[in-house]
Length: 211
Image (cartoon, rainbow, N blue to C red; front, side, top):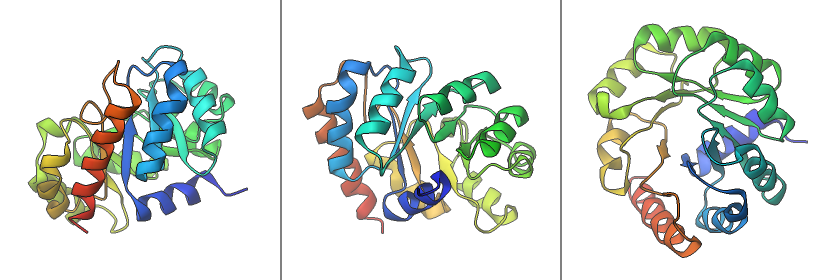
């Protein structure tokens, strides 16, 4: 079986875009997932403040075994265990919790904690994080990305999240962002599969224009 981190690194090379499906319902997961995977997405996150998130994660994980599916808004160690039990392989948080990162790594899952400062970034990497979620990106800028990457280990994936859309990828990419987390610009609660397919295509096209 391919390790979660290997799948993550492969996905980051192919299309480093994380689909954040906040508000997704389990009944919607298969159709929405189909559209995302067809568009090229291999990183799928269901925030834990969505309806029955563990059910959605289990459905998506089974349907798309080659994708890296997991949870966002993971704030406690017990939640990491719950996501792992549902088959999730990705643990994303809006903050840095050493306990969450250490357990995530111990269970063989991919850890992407939220950071905004150099102190948080280095603490997260010291705990074993595989990448860093720059959040909320609205409080930062491409210049912040460039400054952080100047001092972080060269291979560190820094992924801005918050306010990211097809129209503003270029600046962040120029600053050195390794990828992006896409939330409401990709999926909003109530969006049907056709709507998500259209949004996904626009975002993927915008990304490919940069690379």
